[in-house]
Amino acid sequence: MNFVFLLAGLLFVFVVGWLVSSNRKDIKYKRMGVLFALQIVISFLCLHTSGGIKTLQSISGFFNWLIQQANGGVNFVFGGLMVKEGGSVFFLNVLMPIVFVSALVGILNYLKILPFIIKWTGWALNKVGHMGELESYFAVSTAILGQPEVYLTIKDQIPKLNEQRLYTICASAMSAVSAAMLASYMKMVPGKFVVVAVFLNILSALIISCIINPYDVGDNDELVEIQTDTKEPFFEVLGNYITDGFKLAISVAAMLIGFVALVTFLNNTFTAVINISFTTLIGYVFAPIAWIMGVPTQDIVKVGSLMATKLITNEFVAMGNLHSIASGLTAKGNAIISAYLVSFANFGTVGIVTGSIKAIGKEQGSYVAKFSMKLLLGATLASVLTGTIVGFYF
Image 1 (tube, rainbow, N blue to C red):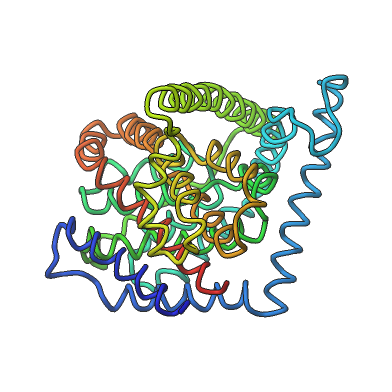
Image 2: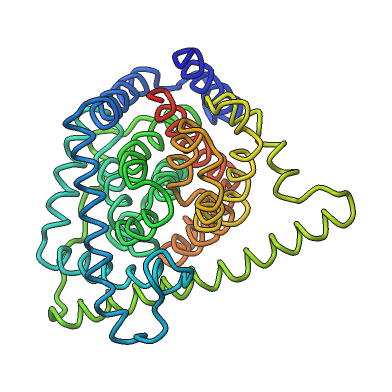
């Protein structure tokens, strides 16, 4: 039965992608097959072998350890405001570790460790998938660096890119999550699903681009002069990353206050008027998609509600809701929705992506604004693909 749902999920993703494809006759089936095979290998090793499971546990344990280290700084500043482990001060327990992890990313970036990993992982990915050196590099970098900083690594290339290549890099950015966010995500969903989703989303975004946005990149059009050098002093760079991490935590907190309050308002209003909450109502809308992905029937409305919540608000709001109802979901339902939520595919991110590109190249920003809804659809399909593959192993 799992195999049937895997095929159903793949067929759904392909059909929807085909319907909005810019060039249906040139869909890159071979590239899709190679990238999908790589996804199956990665997911099998991570979720179905003892070595892979232990590796994921180690990675999850490492990020939990990082959170404990981050608590040293948080305790020093906020001391008396801290609550016991598992308490309810979301800003302190979940968002503040972003500052520390962002500092670590800055150090690794300054020491050229991250640029080295990104460059050669991207090179290897291009040799396997043949998506283009720039596209492969960017797909990997989005899984480590945050928005909008990741666009600065290719700021000289962006003004030279056409609409097709812009779509691919923007879809990768929306389908990935930054390393600074991982520890916070792991406070709300199982760490193993966060790690697997990061790996799979890199490939899912490229697969969707092969359907919606197929094109060929010539050998003389790679544009891979990537900016990695930095002339700033170490402590200036470190300070910038720490400040950026704090700004990110504040921004997420502000969005959560607004979005959670809005959802609460809609739930209470809908319940008073039609005796059904807003989240339950949108859950019915997304329930068929959840079922196609392999979510057990008893979970599809709840999972559908979380899928819609992520799209309308952001992944933090949806993860917070999942954290409160996870005990009432099946193991398979938990696995699928946990993996699905690990991406930036929501309406708010469309604005961030468009603004970031426009700040670097005005004409390219206009391109992105023109295909923004197709971009959101592609990133959402990438999440559906990732969730479907994870569900196959449960």
